[in-house]
Amino acid sequence: MKKVCLAVVTVLLAQFSFAQHFQLGVKGGVNISNFTGGNFDAVKKKALVGFQGGLYLNFKAGAFGLQPELLVSSQGAKIDTINAGSYDWKVTYINVPVMAQFRLQGGFYFELGPQVGFKIADEISNSTIDEFAKGLDLSAAAGLGIRGKKGYGIGARYTAGISKVGDFSGTSNINPDFKNGVLQVSLSIPLTH
Image 1 (spheres, rainbow, N blue to C red):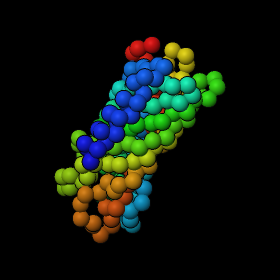
Image 2 (image 1 turned 135 degrees about the vertical axis):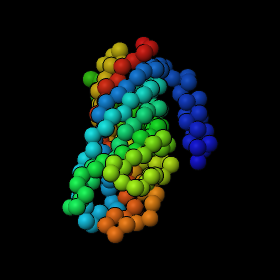
Image 3 (image 1 turned 120 degrees about the horizontal axis):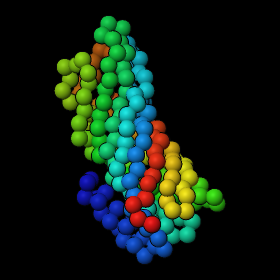
C-alpha cells in the first residue's frame, strides 16, 4: 500500500512539474478530533485538541492546484467513564494528504483529496492497553481557505476516516470499530516564492 501511494504521488508530482508555479512551505495549526462510529455504550466521547504541522508543496496551473503535504498530526478523543474518570486516547500520525485545489477570485480556494496516515505513536492515559490503533489510517479530506499572492494563507479542513482505528479486542463497553474525524485549522507560510 505504501508503494502504491508513493507511486501515485510521484506520478502526480511529475505531471505538475511543468506547472506555471510551485511553492515549498511550512504549515501548522490545531486539530480538533474525535472518533466516529463504533460502539461506546458506557462511555462518552469528547473532542480532543491536538496539533498538526509539517511541509507542503503547492503546484499551480491556472485555477487548479495540487498540494501534497507531509504532516505530523496528533489526534484522538477524550473518553469519560463513570468509574474511571476522564482519559485521552491519543494517536500521532505522519499524514500524507494529496489535495486537489480549485482557486477562486480573491485568493479563496476549496480542496479535496485522499490522505494516508502512518502511526508513529499511540497512548491511552490510565489504561493497560499498550497499542490500540492500527498502523495505517486512510481518510478523505475536504477544506477551504484563502491564500495571498505571496503564498501566506489560512485554511480549514475536515478529514473523515475511511479505515477503522481500533486494533484491539472489544471490551464490554467499547467496540474497536471506530474511525478518525479531524477538523484542522492551519496557517501556511511559504519558504519559496
